[in-house]
Length: 315
Image (cartoon, rainbow, N blue to C red; front, top):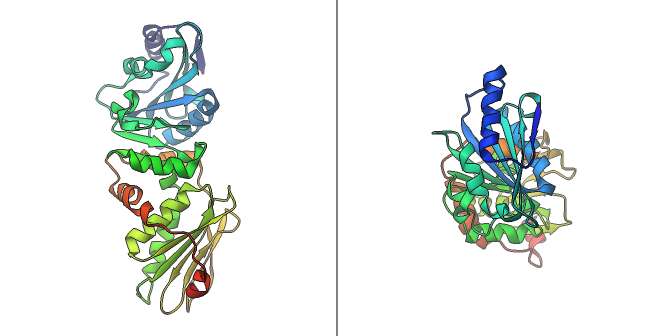
């Protein structure tokens, strides 16, 4: 069910929510958090769909602040979505026009759930310092997605410069399955020291950079980050050891092969994670992610590009 409220006020939207609850119990109250999504028109609907999917695991109230147009007079158009149109949540879409565009936090405040944590999510270009943004300042967790920025790798470096405890990025959660597989491979004998790492991924892939930085910090060895064509995500990781390399390769973006000395080749389903899956993972925790913080603020600076003769030395 979708209820449209054009040229409205926050008081009228709240009244519509109360009427829905009283008329048919359309809105359940067992919400674990408030998710505030700040988006432009281009990113709004994909972000709502991702949030709806994630809400099936994390029932929440979703408030979507859409920066529609800064031109013209101040106006608020709203939608209330419940039932099949809202996953396991109620969705309040607030389209702001004119001067109202610069006051999203004030528009959102009347709809925050009492005594529930607040998570802010920017599916497009985030503010320069999310923690200092008015919406980010009232959130315990702040989720960005640098993969949706115009220059993803540069945006990732910006996130490192502006990091505050509670910040995270979906580029990090997209590395989770890779980190789990590599950690499991190193748990198998022989337990030898890794002397070098080579990570290959798209030139525009911030997740590849984060994975390489995580390996460098975890294994305390040189890491070479090799750039492939744009748009392919993470392609492969090689961990060099005395007995031979461990290779995890995913050339097609769906299925990976794991090769290690003395072991048969393993084929593993490793599809590229959707935004919904990544967002659901980030909503599982409300405390600062200390590993991500170290990788972002310390690990990225240690990455190097390929050196002449490096491939031969690693082979």
